[in-house]
Amino acid sequence: MFTLFKKKKVKEDVAANIFINSIFNTIDSGFPEIVGILNDAPEFVSSPQLSVANDDHFVLLVFATNLDMIDTHFESYEADNLKIAIIEKLSEIFETSSDDLTKVVLSYQNYLSKVNFPSKNKVYAMSKGIFGKYNLYNFQDEYFKNMKSPNPMLLKRLDEVMENFVFNWDVFEKKYHLSH
Image (cartoon, rainbow, N blue to C red; front, side, top):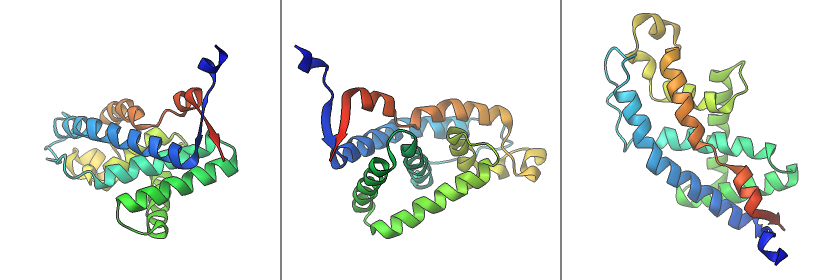
């Protein structure tokens, strides 16, 4: 009877698959909503006319953020091993080397820290990252365009939606336990 309440033991490899599949599923279903919010945003002077097919920056922003957040959920050696497994699998998906993908992810993480400084809120960083990577500042009125700052009303709406793109490690940890 008590075995029903036991967590399933999974290796980093399996956890990496769960993480990657979950993030891609969320992006596939959620990025069209992001595009709709941005293309129809009344805060823009003109629509940026973003395409759902143009999700490269978004995918990297979401994965960079989520990889950065792993450290808060696991011991350092577990987090490091899990991130290595994730990067290896993603490098196969993106048809690039693990080293090259690691450099790109680190570049995105540094970019997100820079655009979000002094805040440490990683969800907000993704919203600001979208503005920069998709050059959305240019579609705002002159005031926000010149400041290179997102309109706070639009940014708030984006922040609320971006929370959905953060992997839920709490749910994972209720179901699974990392094993070596």
